[in-house]
Length: 153
Image 1 (tube, helix red, strand yellow):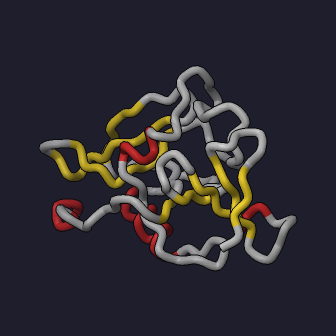
Image 2 (tube, helix red, strand yellow; image 1 turned 45 degrees about the horizontal axis):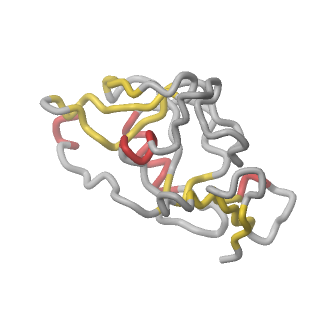
């Protein structure tokens, strides 16, 4: 892969696969955590089960192998000194919505409730898995292991 440091904020590096002007196929490497993010996450809200399917199905930058991030992975992007979006100054991301993003982390005691991170204000909340939230797929790091999916039925 060909990565280049994002000069306005060197915490991040960007990979652009074969199409330098098309931001939709870019990947972003968070050099602090080692996690690879979609540069432009999905702009519509979906249920948790649809989020799992979406991340498994997508191909970004010529790569597959994405998953719904864990709560701590999403929260690692939050910069509470900023809002709308609550992301680090000069971040390289596009189309980040000012709402909640699904995590694969279950709420203790109720697997039908998931943690999410709101990128409007940076707050971590819990929501029922049938609610509509945004999804921001990642590669690398820990991923959802499918536990407790039977309890969603």
